[in-house]
Image 1 (tube, rainbow, N blue to C red):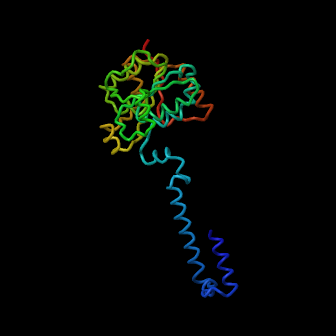
Image 2 (spheres, one colour):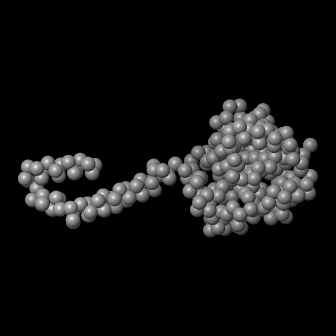
Amino acid sequence: MSRRQVSSTRRLVDTGNFPFSGALHSKSRSSPLLSVGLILLGAFLLIAYAYSGHGIFGGNKEALSKVEGDFSCTLEVQRAIPILKKAYGDSMHKVLHVGPDTCSVVSELLKEEETEAWGVEPYDIEDADAKCKSAIHKGIVRVADIKFPLPYRSKSFSMVIVSDALDYLSPKYLNRTLPELARVASDGLVIFAGYPGQQRAKVAELSKFGRPAKMRSSTWWIRFFVQTSLEENEAASKKFEQAATKRSYKPACQVFHLNPYH
């Protein structure tokens, strides 16, 4: 746009119809001002473009949310679905996801061939979109307090995936919830948990979850798994690592592969 403006201006100057043609030829005043003006205009347009959602920042909401502190392991589950598919194969034919924003995970899982998916949303979802409300109406997604027994029979699902839910529970409630998650799985239980030091938006946490997340170390989790008689699924863990290495995938969350109760 700026080039066309300059060209038209030059034509006006050449024909003698521009009353301020002498000012444009002044190197000491107008040229520096014009350059500064164009730079400021370009910077303004770039900022507006970026924040409109179509620029270089618009396509990476996940990265922005991490910078701002709103970290999510549920987003990580969506990234890891192809890796989980490689690691678990046929065991991913009937999957239950438990965690905030479960509608988005269920939607991604249903895109996989020969995969059925259900979800449990542990927290209030008043701001759910129409698709999520439809899934709730159909019973695909349920809103349930996971501190109490899950509304499913034992081994109802071949695989249970959990994210952004256990980090908000105290050990008292974890002692109830974790065995329940293992109870409804037949082949595997996968837990996505935050690393110590990762922070989430405190205001949003307190309003939605009632308490801030507690990021625990892998040592803490392993010790807790032993206390609840849950064993590592070594075969699945190894396959997951191999698939992750092959695809250059590095989890941003801790990923634990556990055997369900037999």
